[in-house]
Every structure is written in C-alpha cells, then in structure tokens.
Amino acid sequence: MEKIPILRMGKFLLVTIQIDLYDRLALNLESDLVQMVSKTAAKGVLIDISALSIVDSFMGRIIGNIGNMSKILGAETVVVGMQPAVAITLIELGLELKGVHTSLNVERGMDLLRSIIDLDEPENDEEDADSSQ
Amino acid sequence: MEKIPILRMGKFLLVTIQIDLYDRLALNLESDLVQMVSKTAAKGVLIDISALSIVDSFMGRIIGNIGNMSKILGAETVVVGMQPAVAITLIELGLELKGVHTSLNVERGMDLLRSIIDLDEPENDEEDADSSQ
Image (cartoon, rainbow over all chains, first blue to last red; front, side, top):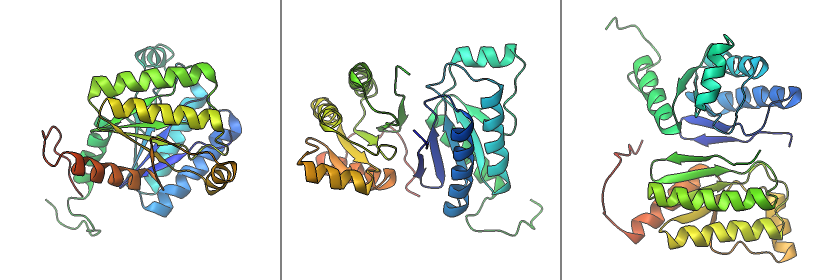
C-alpha cells in the first residue's frame, strides 16, 4: 500500500490511518494532504488514529508536520479516535502532539472544527477581518 | 492489523478499506460492522475502497454480505471511491456487487444515502440537527 486515501467531506478532509507510517508512506501522506488542502480549499483536516495502538515520536512528528502545513494553508487539524493507551503512552513518554487539536471521535472532531472555523471567520467568504468586534 | 476502524458520522457509518481483506480480517469487519449498525441504529453504511486497486470475487462477496446483513438491520450500504480500473475489471470478470449501491465518492454516497432514507421514511425521528450547509 503506497497511499493513504484522503476523503473529502464538505469543507473537511478525513484521513484514517490504519497502519504504521513508515518513511515513504508518511512523506506521501504529507504531500498528498497538503495538495488536497490546497486543491479543495479545505478548512479542516481530521486524522483518525483509532486503529493505532502505538504512536511513537516519528508518527507524532508527522502528525505535527501535517498540522503545521495545513495551518499555513488555512486548515485546522484535529486528531480523533486516540485509544486511551496511546494517550497514556504519549504523556508518559513526554511526547506532545504539537500544532493539532484532539477530540474523542470524528463527530466531536467535526463539531470542534466547526466551532474553530466559526470563531475564525464568522461570515463565509468574508476575508477582510477589519472589524474589531 | 486486526481491525478496520468504523467511524460514526451522524446516522451513517464509514469504513475505509485500505488493505486486502484476508479471511479473518473480513470476518472481523463483518461482525464489527453489524454490531455497530445494531448499536448505533445507523441508517447507512459507506464503504470507501479508493485505496484498492484490485477487488476480487472474495472481496466482492464480503462487500455483498455486509450489504445484505446491514439491510436486514435497516441500513443501506454504498460502496464509494472505486477506481476506474476496478470497475473495468469487475465488469470484464462478470463480478457483481450485489446488495449494495455504488457512488463516485463519499460526498455523493452520503447524498445517495440521504435520498434513499428520505424515500424509505419521510419523517421519523430527528436525532441530530444536521446542518444542510
């Protein structure tokens, strides 16, 4: 398997990571996702990791990279579905998922994205943020 | 990997198949999905196969099984994201995906599900306020 599929759902993109990201796969995912964010003008990226029982520092860095790259292109990233054991390990190892939000599951992740996007830009296509309220 | 994650999105369930379904994995998926349909009272199941470059008769039968099992429990199944080459092969080999609908991508699959469900039961119980935009 050389590619992880990226599903478009309205303004959001959804990626389900089901296997360990080795080097090339991770790089492919990064570039595919960034291109997809750019092409679809997505406002949010959901990364589901419910299938992963381990998130190591490499994986954490890739997720962080995706979050930061997407941010530059105007999309927020939410990691969803983390197994409790993964959360424990992340904290115990002192790893941080920088640059991304987290949420319990896809539905809540979408709600979170909607609230973030609403905060960012109250009106749909209003690009000028010149009002001070 | 022993399990394929099943994501709940409102009234629908989404499964992204990224690897070939060998025996046990396929059986696990069938039972997980049927339990999930039952537990969440889902009205639709979306199976994304955009990562698959081959769909053989075994895979076709598993997908058909899922469709029929879900149907009994009140959920329609839509296969989305089929690669053109897969469609060609299915037809050339005379394989049919029985018991399931197909659609180009997840968004259209959801639209299809909504239209089917609307036809089935015009107004039942509104659980989620689904914003239409």
